[in-house]
Length: 112
Image 1: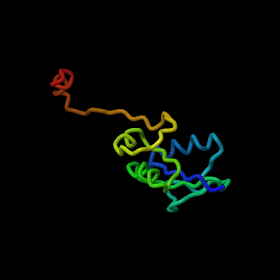
Image 2 (image 1 turned 45 degrees about the vertical axis):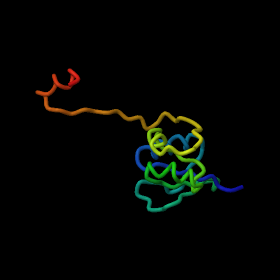
Image 3 (image 1 turned 90 degrees about the vertical axis):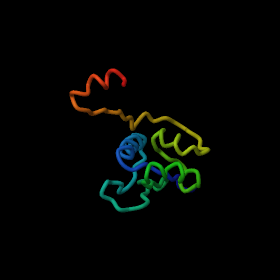
């Protein structure tokens, strides 16, 4: 049986993904923020992982370099590739914040 390869988006989303994988006993060896390895294997050698820029994850899956990609849904939509969306993990949520000077408060709330 060949290994299943995961392409993970770098950064916060990768950390949240690793927490989920850990709960189902899939544990990459040596995957830390300071590691310089390109490809990491799981402790049971059934899986391999690599980190990529979020915009590259759907490309790696589309071209077969990865079997599974975990990336934000916005990235999947932007790439517009013919990929099967297996599961929404409900991680990586973000919020938009607006900053302004206090004297502009009325303009912001009035919608102008």
